[in-house]
Image (tube, rainbow, N blue to C red; front, side):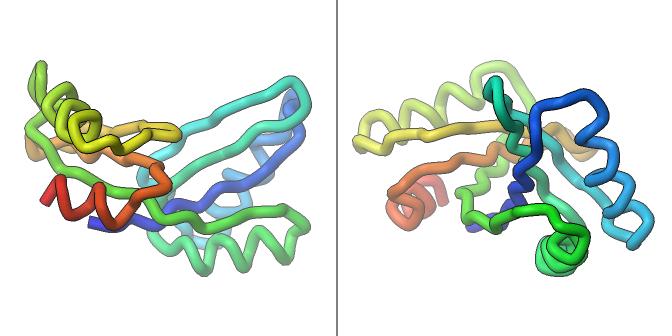
Length: 127
């Protein structure tokens, strides 16, 4: 399945994450998954929210720069070895992974989120 992710760009300084998170919460946006990547100069706050379009609009009004990106979402059993099966399928078919993260849910499943430049091909392989 295709999952839309909101990425917010921020300076990599103490306290810069809080206004992003607080703004979303004050506007009724729930953060369902959160991942932060950093460089010496800036951070990328990647998240799935209850409403990415609304979240992006609200953050834009507050001066934050963000993008919405499509990822491949793969639901797997939350068990040892399941991720390696997914990665093996992609590797055998020449699908490069730019980045990956996941989150476990309470129903015994995990959602693996994969950024690739071959999104449709990866989605078809992992159905």
